[in-house]
Image 1 (cartoon, rainbow over the protein chains, first blue to last red):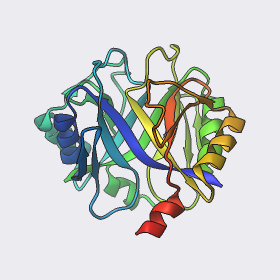
Image 2 (tube, each protein chain N blue to C red):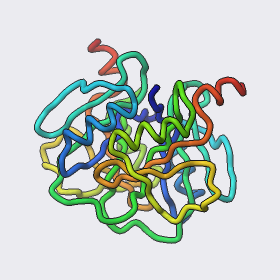
Image 3 (cartoon, rainbow over the protein chains, first blue to last red):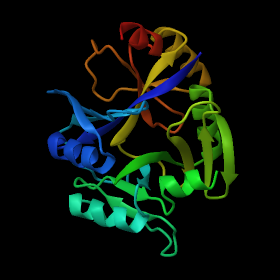
Image 4 (cartoon, helix red, strand yellow):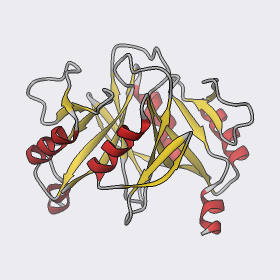
Length: 126
Length: 126
């Protein structure tokens, strides 16, 4: 008897561009669209989906929860460039300038990190 | 070329009790403990792990990201009772009182939901 993580829910002033941003980041698709949420998820892999939910208030403080991503099929540096092209921007949350990860924020300012080691680096090290 | 969600990172004033809470919620184990983070994860399933990271500031506003959980091996009602026993409490984020899900918060106030349908309900409906 436990719980399983089914959904990571993200509040957004404008859900559609945030759902499209994260779908492009993760290579996911819009699975369902409803006035109360937009669900995005992977076509081919189990695991949590993301719901983007409309809220009236904008982001004010550093998020207490954030996602750490790994580049899949490229290097972290190339993936950071791709994400910047999708609308991410560099973010300063007081991280050590020598950190191995890169701190970015989505178009509504939600911080996330790109880890230095790609999926292939981690799988190759196993 | 995409990114994959590797880690859901949670800021905590006191990381150890929050890591223990979420490990008990999810049936996960502490995989790594470092001054900068505690990693918890499942023994038997791929997917994102959780890092609980120490921060000096306490939670102030409703989280912009939250997790939605499904009961695995029990009903939502029984799972909510179990989670309350682990240190969760009911939370009011302005949800409709007729919502099918239950809004709870972890010991540092991080909101999360327990969805009405269990893992077995969803898998049975496929």
